[in-house]
Length: 161
Image 1: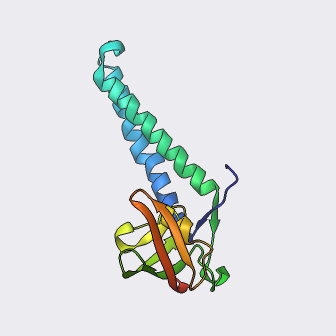
Image 2: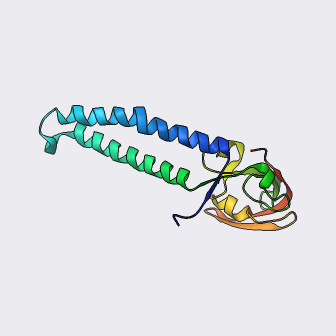
């Protein structure tokens, strides 16, 4: 699984890189200072501030590791290399929700560009995975917590990512 590439735009990659640099810099420095300050308070076995600061440090390191992994596996994709007749990363797809009897439009994006409120969804999300590879006119059946979603693909275009 470590060799799986993660499609990203240059903008998405740069946002993730900036977040990583921020976390590794000023945020980690602040948490490290909190750990040192709490350590100076004395007995570590009963020092709640120390244990909380160490837990925060561990969570921060896990987030840093996750971002680093995503950036290491990133594959920068441009719109000119994307397929036009099949749903893929970077597609803006208009579907007809057969259960809700309404049209919806989704943009399939990579990490750092997701915005569910604007229907910008990750290609790795359940809906994204269910739509990938579909062509105009096909129906995607997607297993979701509330049941099976059925989307008929009406239109596929480049999202202008």
